[in-house]
Image (cartoon, rainbow, N blue to C red; front, side):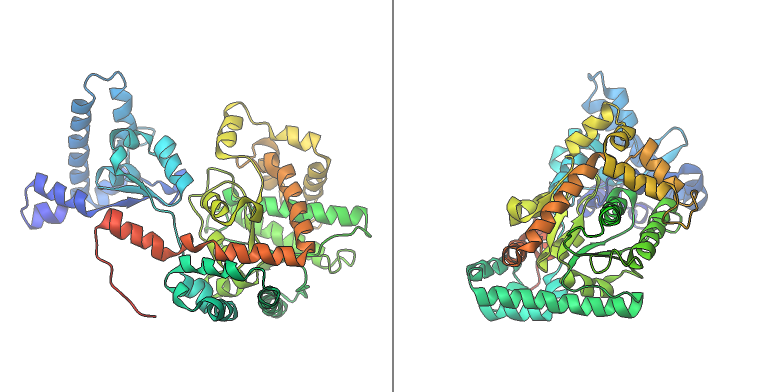
Length: 488
């Protein structure tokens, strides 16, 4: 708008028409801290002309609201909710509101995410402009996340169905035709095992820990955040460890619990979760009673290059965010494309992955988004779960008394207090369901042939989650652009 008006002398109405028709707003998160609010005072000192234009955009938008809803008793509350300028507690610019007003299209990145944008986060804009809202479920590219990172699997698939699936991932479903072929299943299993052995060698080299390639490689790699609930995964590890300590001869399907991810520089709780993972690893990995049954690994410097080693080696993909918090997720897609099974909540793109691969090939646990909201609205009491679940109490007590901090009861106290007295992401509410679901994982893993079939079906049925499909939908439904043919 500044360029059009100030430098090209285009009248406001024409400039605004071009701007709206040019811009589209993709929302990538429901987390309030990412829906930026910029202090007007700062904006005024840095970008005074831009602020003048924003004020004018907001004035004209509010005048339209007054015309459209002149007879509505909700007009004032609607203006307060949708105004680009937030008056209190500190006068600021709501960047998401500016994006909604200035765009011709608004979209979320998974079906549930878009639904929650319309029903909650951006509900006022959905009320006045329902036609602006679209869903564009995320995707990832099979060229990197299968072809480049898993060449042996790529070769096996191409040997059966040709290589056109690399540019049209929907075609990978053809490998279902070979699921009754025992030799195909054997080759599939051998490729997974080879990838796990490579990962084990990497862990030995960089972590100095011997892990069992025959164990379940149970992996959670993603940005460290409380809502993604790496901490719930840690509570499960301590549950297994407690069982071993209580009964050293207990039979247990061996697990290698692998974490990776980075925390924002100032995010204290996320950094403390990383500290706890490594503290638990220090105890568990050096306890002879845990032996080859349980290992805990935190991989340093998680990035794309390391991801290319991790995804092909995974047996189990941890997608355990609190329902209603994850916009989409893309790691869940990378894991499934490489034949990992998912344990997860009905959150983000997990919902659509489960629909595609089949409920019987997905390990589901936990509250739904609706149940999360209802439980919070009716007064969630995390202490109730601590008092009534003996295993949970044993886990929390072990952390609280300093068993993983050399007797220091203060080190992890912020995490313990957050869970006991607030638990905003409802780990305690989902704990029992998660533990029960992990038992189902262990039982399924004992049957190697069944697990291999489930693995093949996960890889075969995730063609929808190619970024080619996602970008095609943007091109056709939002950008109104022309696709350019490319060769491999």
